[in-house]
Amino acid sequence: MMKRPSVSYLLAATLALIVCTQAPGWAQKPSNLSGKWVFVQGKSEGTPTVPRIFNTTGAPAGSNDMVITQTAAAVNVRIGAVSFVYRLDGTESNISADGRAGFPIGKATWDGGKLVVTLTQEVFSTAKGDYVKVPLKEVYGVANGVLTLERSRTHLNGKVDSQKLVYARATR
Image (cartoon, rainbow, N blue to C red; front, side, top):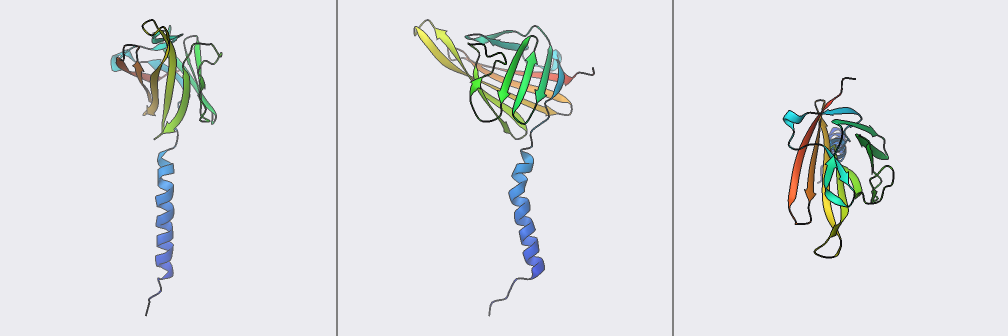
């Protein structure tokens, strides 16, 4: 004879199933990157740069401040006089807020509460006599009032360099 499970056993099993299926979603909650951030040189490895048109080396940012506004559709980043838009709808697009040619093409997603931006930039290679696509990656994360931007860039010679830029929330 088969014993039927008790009502309390079924309720406990159902609750456990709900918690297990929802827990991964809870861990994926996007960070709130919005605000004005000030570069902290002493805790950083590298200096703030902005994309240089058709060049992976980047250009000096011209400012140690970064302003981020965030919506469900996009994360907008302004460093100095340069603004970027990281769209969150899964499409790849030019990250220049002004639609300027030569800026990287990017796609942004949330991963474990961090904003991960995968970029591709076309750069002219004199050795190949043509444009080649080189990958770049940026990861934005916030913890305890500190924003960390981790970047990796691949150059034409294949060398990859990495930066870890640390920003504190501006008090005003």
